[in-house]
Amino acid sequence: MLIPVELSTFSFDPASHVPVIVLRELCGDRTISVAIGHSDANAIALKSMEVTSESPMTIDLVTMVIDALGGSLDKVVLIPGEEKGTCQARMYVAGTKGLNIIQCRPPDGVALAIRCRCPAFADEALFIQNEEDVPEDQRLRQTIRSTDTLDFGRYYLE
Image 1: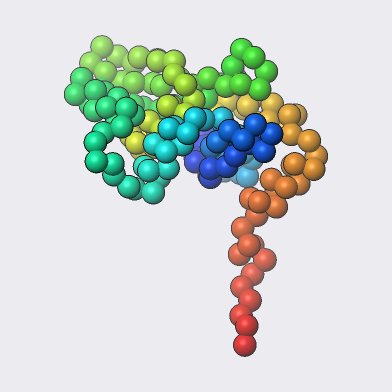
Image 2: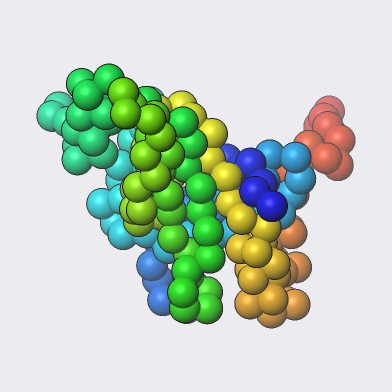
């Protein structure tokens, strides 16, 4: 089953110090983390903060090529990778010759989904895999980090 997801936040994997993006399901509070490179993190962060760069980034060029060829990005889907704990991405590009499914790196797929304002989905198996891989103490930390402090109400100092 495919679950709609959105970019929740950026973080670092505490074990490997690799940047990760955290994707959250739209109709729930489960998350998955996707390891990304520093340049990928930069590209996604710039777009999510609506900052434009002086010259187009590679991800912008891909978007311009899709547009120039009369295509559009319909959706991006993250699926489990062949190795445990990894994932792959597929871009669904509608063009003049029909729908094309293009395999890509997960950070590229997420960055393109953000650029093109198209939906992103994650396979249910990624959420299950994520829950199995995270020790109980880290699950508690994730829950605390993802809790909105406004859930506890507003307090005013007088």
